[in-house]
Image (tube, rainbow, N blue to C red; front, top):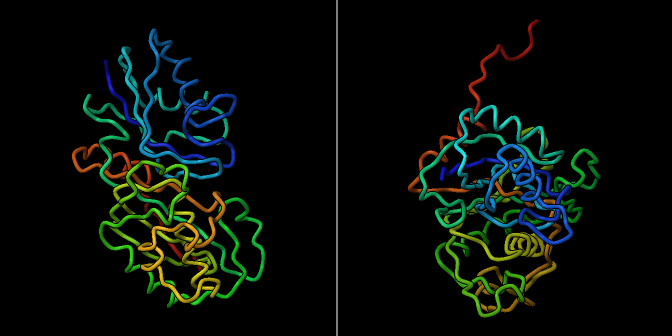
Length: 277
């Protein structure tokens, strides 16, 4: 058996999440269907992903892997063939042979997401289904001051979809939390979060809570108190899925994956810049 890793990008609005479901179109269905056509496997295709994403959630750098009894001789040609067959909405950006021990989910040491909001009084139709529009005034200094409460390992039961964590551990460790402004469209703000893993709806609830604190809808308690309460009703709203992006999966023991990211997302392009006159 040979093990192959894929780096993929997809439009979450075109799928009912990434993982296979009954009577629903998913990213996994699209990719597996294309791979089956090309390889005609004599066994069930074992397809694994770095993280689960719900309907409407996008990915700019999701990692997957599958095992094949058929060795793929020309990986670049195979990648282009998968893209031709998988349909609109998902693209394989990079693909490579990886060690048998690699597993997209269980080998992953950290996951990174971004959540985009449009901070403007005006609608921006070019960002429809790509970011969540927030019209209220936000105290950004106050919001930024809340990020320190995410440092280290904590129980995030108050920032999760409750039925999904019943009888399950809810402690997670954040490695990074920040806020960035688009240098061109300065009304486009993105929250960036990196942790060992995340609970169901955790980032959508966390970002919604930060926005509610910043707009004054939540008063009298900070993010630290909300986290410590272990009470979902103490937190803010769950923001819509279309503002959320799976950005990157990290693998401490598999540098091959970082090389895939670099080759696919950081092209070495050189040309003269600026006005020619």
